[in-house]
Amino acid sequence: MALAAVAGCSAVLVVAAALAVALPEDEAPQGEVPALAAEHGVDLGVAVAVEPLLWDGGYRDVVTANYTSVTAENTMKWDSVQPERGEFDWSGPDTVMDFAERNGLDVRGHTLLWHNQQPAWLAGGSFGPQELRQIMREHVGELVGRYEGRITAWDVVNEPFADEGAQLRENLWYGVLGQDYIAEALWAAHEADPGARLYINEFGIEDGGAKADALYALAEDLVERGVPLHGIGFQSHFVHGQVPEDLAGTMRRFTGLGLEVAVTELDVRVPEPATDAELADQAAEYRRVVEACLDVAGCVGVTVWGVTDGHSWIPEWFPGYTAATPFGEDYRPKPALEGIVEALARRPAPVAS
Ligand code: XIL
Image 1 (tube, rainbow, N blue to C red):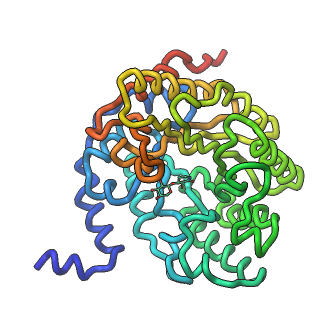
Image 2 (image 1 turned 180 degrees about the horizontal axis):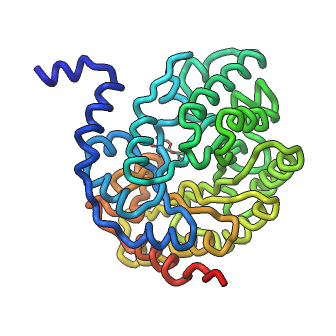
C-alpha cells in the first residue's frame, strides 16, 4: 500500500520524502582532508550521483567525511534538467543542493552548454539563431537563477574545443550562433547569478599544446572584452603514467590573465588489473596534482570525478581501465587519498604576519 502510494507520486515528492528520512541519520567521522583543505583556503570536491546520495549511507559518509564541495556528475546537465522543451525536472539538482547544504558543502554547477547529454528535442531540432538564443537564455536563466547565491561556480561552457587541436568544436551552438555563443552564455549566466564564478571547462589542456593555446587566446579575448569569464576548469582525466609534469605552469598562464583555475574532474585511470605498485604510483600522481593547485595562487580547488571506483565513469567509458578514484569499490580509502593528504599536510598555508 505504502509502496503503491510512493510509486504513484511524482519524482519530486519521492525525492523530498527520501531526503527527509535518510539524510539526518548520517554522522560520518570527519577525515583529515576537509580541515587541511580549509587551512589552505582550497576546495577539495567530488562529483556525486543522485541515486547513491539518496539511498546509500556509506556513499554519503565518504563524501561528507572527505570533501568540502560537490559537483553534480550528471543531474544538472541539459537532458536531466529540461528533458522536454519547457519542462524542467528539479528533483535531481534539488537533491544535490539539499544534501550539500545540510552538510555544509559548497556546490560547483555542471554544466550549462555541452555537446553531450543534450535532450533529443534540442540535439535534433532545427532552430534559427533567434530561437536558439532564446532557448539558451531560458535554460541558463531557469537553472542558474533557481540556485542563485547557492552555487560557487558554474561550468558555463563545457568542452568548447574539438577533441584534439585548436579548432572550436562544431556543436549546435557554434553552428547556429557562431563563436560568440560562448560570450552570450557567459552573459546569460551572469545575469541569472551575478555572484557565481563562471567557467569554461575543458579537457586535454593540462599539459599545454595547441588546444591549450587556443583556449588561452579565447580566454584572453573574452577578458579583454569584459565578458564575465572568471575561471578555467582543467578537467584532468589522466591516464596513470601520463600525469603532466608541469600542470602548475599551464595553470599559471591562465591565472596570468586574472582568471582563477580549478581542477574540476580529476581521475587517474589504471589499466586492469591495478597492482599495488601502480596504486602507490597513483598516490604520487594524486599528490602531484594537488600540489600543483597549491603552488598556483589562483587555483581554487581540486574536484575528484566519482566517489568510489565502483561509482566511477571510467570502466564504462574506457574499457580495460579501472581504479581511477581515491576510494575502492569497498568504500575504503586507497593510497591515492593519502597522496592528497600528504600534499595538503606538507605544505601548510603561510602564516599571516
Ligand atoms: C560523465 C559522467 O561521469 C558519466 O556518468 C556520463 O555517462 C557521461 O558524462 N567530461 C565532463 C563530464 O565534463 O560531465 C563527464 O561526465 C566526463 C567527461
